[in-house]
Image 1: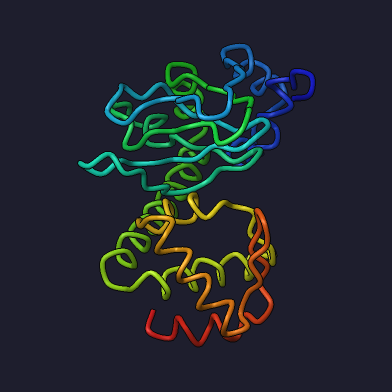
Image 2: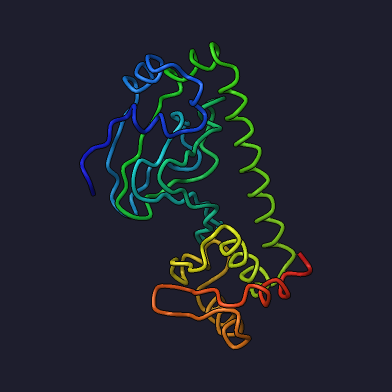
Length: 224
């Protein structure tokens, strides 16, 4: 983990705040908290009172929910300078999911009490955050729909195709992490990966899934 980044420098990287004056960024940074979380450490838990807006300064965070049987479902990964916890930032209430450091990570928290007066002065920031919330809600609903309507092979093909379309031809998630994102177990994902590899769509290497023929993945998701 590198030296501590400057909270103000982190805030300048967040698109929500691009219209703020330098002194407003500094004011917000003075109230922010920067902390190191070790891999697998819980940042906040589902059902706890929401604290504010969170941003990944370094590392990677996963938002998860747990089934009644305790199985983990990964909703989304967040990379450096991506934000999470927008619901708590705007309205307080309870966290809708649990956030866990996927690797050693530095996370910045902007407390809701510090953010509220800024949102009153800058309604455009409030609008940007609400749009981001809507996009994340659509993403979550799409994931839920796929988990209930389509088999694992189809969901896996759709997931890998989305990776390729976003410019990431190599997926470096473990099979267990992919299974958690698809709402299934590693053994089932392993079988689906073997099928897609036999079809020539991908190559499975240790710690990575390389996408070779996205058109084969596209054929597998035509029902989506």
